Length: 340
Image (cartoon, helix red, strand yellow):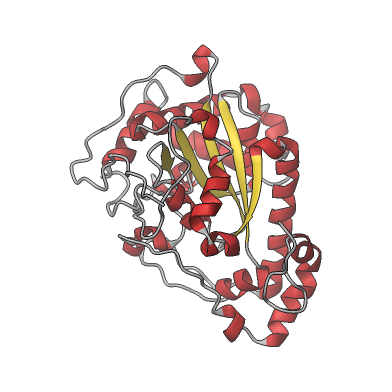
């Protein structure tokens, strides 16, 4: 399979020069910004998938865009290009374009609106009336600035949160497709038992404390059930479930499946994307792997050998209904032949 040519994007700049070109609002002429949203639970390969999709010349892998106003921009955290986000030519230009005509409190106002609307239960979305709220308009304006600043047709948001995806699905001016990523919860739980000290320059913006197994198992169930509900609302043509294990086994084949969700927007571009090795570009937030200069997609199933049997069975019992539904064996750690 031939490698896709990487888009001409700046990996990093110390001068912070803006690169955003002016465009008319997408929804002003009846069109919408295509957003490919990656939903699921943490430690499931969502950042890796974001980076892989960003290798396509028509796609901007934005990372966890939900965090831009929450903490990335206020704390000047690192972009995947290797510099703090306010020094990144791409993101400083995007935020400058987004801020035009807005109050100086834009970032704080946007963050507070996110806190109200992006919960799983969605009570804030009901009260906010997302489709016509100022928050919806600012959300569309942000994605327009990202598309213009990156020169891309499609923006990937790997924020994972199903509540955020629900906001985007209800927002006029955004054409949403969702990729629901699932990983064996035993691997997720084992990964989250590891703690990491804060080290901002390698992508660890805060200390990550170990998570109890049953806490992870319960949240894994809740997040995936909420994402399933969203995907049913969107329908088969706008949503797809993939397994982390299938992606790392056949990354290019998995990406071809995903790109079919948005191929009508990029009909002149091939579905092939070569991903090994691949280079992160301008992902904001996400796993620490986004700070590596080059990534090779590999299996990470060390938990099968190192996770104690009792702990494995605790997670298995807690997650049994969805383990079976997603095609994972209840008896062993190896996937069965059931399709996701």
